[in-house]
Amino acid sequence: MNDLMTLLYYLNREEAGSQRDMAQATNLSLGKINLILKRLDEQGYIEIERQGTRNHYQVTDKGLALLETGLKDANARKIQLAQAKEQIHQAVILAAGQPRHLDQPVPLLSLGDHTLLDRTLQVLRDQGVERFVLVAGFQADLLAQHVADMPDVTLVVNEAYAHTGTMASLATAAPHIDGDFFLIEGDLLFEVRGIKGLNKVASDSAMLITSVREQHDEAMVELRDGYVYKMGKDIHQFNRIDGEMIGLSKLSYPFYLKMLAIYADNLNPYVNYEYIMLDVAQDYRLGYLKLDDFFWGEIDDASQVHHVLKRVYPRLVRKEERAAKQEVEQFLADQMDASPEEIATLESAGGMTNKNYKVTLKGQPYIIRIAGNGTEKFINRPAEKSNSLLAHILGLDAETLYFDEVTGTKVSAFIPEAETLNANTATYLNNMRMTTGLLRHLHQSGLDFDNRFDVFEEIAKYESFVDEVGSDYFDGYQATRQEVFQLQEDLADLPVQIVPCHIDTVPENFVKGGDGKSYLIDWEYSGMNDLAWDLAAHSLECGFSQEQEDRFLSLYCQDQEVPVSLKTKLLIYQICQDFLWSVWTIFKESRGDDFGDYGIERYRRAQANLARYHDLKKKGRT
Image (cartoon, rainbow, N blue to C red; front, side, top):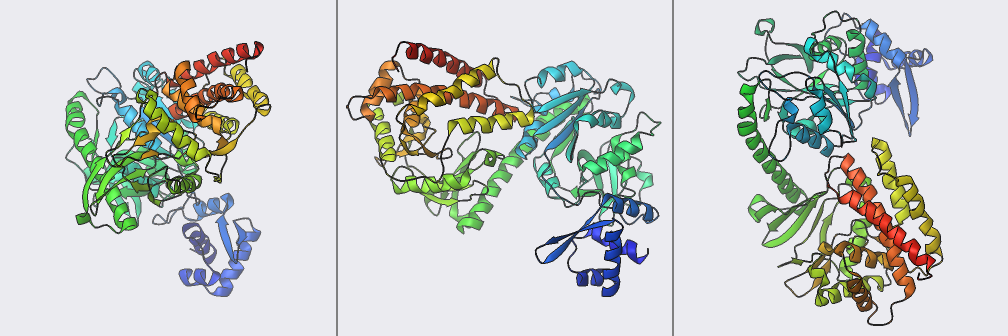
């Protein structure tokens, strides 16, 4: 290999440092390095960008083409197609094949309260995947019905599934792929750490391999120089066997385009995608992740169903639960200097968006919150941290001992003998006195939160999230939206009192402790807002009758006359809240959550209250 190709190969393979570093790594003189860099730049093979005090060298498409030509005979050297490592937001699930002796697609097999496909989708969503292409074939109508209400899933059909291999299915997905993606075979059950691990692999394209099992259909893999070298099912072809491919990979978009280019000249319709991957890997890097103790199973025929669903799956779930707790234990060791002997108990404390654990550490109980993946998109964690601290200073919330603004992980003091309010107990007079007292204390504190909560900005934010995934809005949405946004004009004519607000005053966020204290917890959405928002939200979320709402407002106003303007704002904000949380629900369900009729019911209530508001306005009662 000549000096120019040597340096170009180095720039493609390594994060280049100084020219002196290049000279040392390539055994070329400093003068030659300088001369070659100048030539490569002049000819458009690289781009040089000044970053601070150093230069950054990027191999261009023209440079990649030169490498491809120059390295055709250098089998041990692989070209890296993608140099920028980014979060993967797409996945392709291959589910076209017909299993032997089964009358339904394998992804629809039940795991209890959800299907194999549901689990796969949720595992990927939890790791930041936002868009899916599901390739169907056998009984495609059943798969279509199953994902009909999943706006983040695009279903495509390989009509020739019975007479083609998996590469044909992967090619069918091409119009819907525009970046790096995970590739998963739909008959596969696997641990979540497979996706986590692939995300961390340095190679832009890689497959997961495990130790070879004694099965009849394994795809064996041989590695060389840190990359996949050979793959096949005939053991006689291998010098050594390093593992088994299971059907879980990640592919860079450029690597996928190379696969499509090779497949365009294909004359064998039965070719499977892994062999096209191997063809591309002759010149381009195909990395790997090997996990020897990885729990997984595949279902190709009816004989494997019982083993995978009744034996592998329960063990896999138990292992993942242990792993989750081990992560918490590691967190405690790293952040709170706790040894395993000092952790007396560690148990799940529920949670939907977030995962919560109760832990007894050094004799003291705590609650640990592990924030759900993707929550940073709609939760302002720095504001939550600051506002939670102020709430504790005011005596409203338990102490927060640790808060990571980046991950959202939080450790707070455990409230002993806690009694959480619900929609029923919140109507009790003594509890109303408690809730109004806590809210009044917050609103009259004179403190300022650093952030402001504006419902109309929040609606627009969630609409942008919905539009990103292409979800559908409820019928009549735009007309209703116009009416909701017109309420801004009415609010401008009303006295607005901007104070620190909790925002999410559901009854479950009010807690009575065994120590006689009362608490207002969970400050994720908190910010400066009109005090009427908190009152409106609590009444709405508790389902207060008009009589109960009047009593609640009277207690808040300490038995003084309740201003008409406050009652008017309550209704306006309740309309806005129902509308906002209906859009929030559309977004959350686009990510795989199921809220049943929650979203549409809030939307319809917003419409009904809009009609009620307009009627009151006509009668001059606002």
